[in-house]
Length: 71
Image (tube, rainbow, N blue to C red):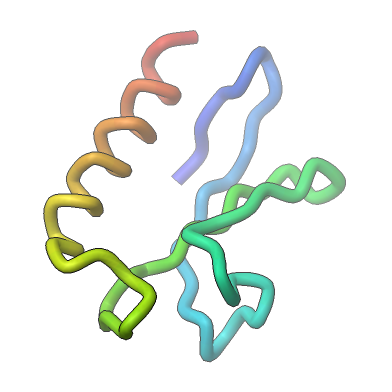
């Protein structure tokens, strides 16, 4: 998915901790050099994640949609 943040186009990609070690301890990160926003795909829970992961994913998706359409 592509989003526009303050006039700059970024690619949003979901990844897992298994494929991207930068997600350790984070829900996501951005890289201004490659214009990417990487978010955890949140397919499995562990002791550090929220109990209601599905609700959290819905909130994150709303935030992404707001960012995409608010520019």
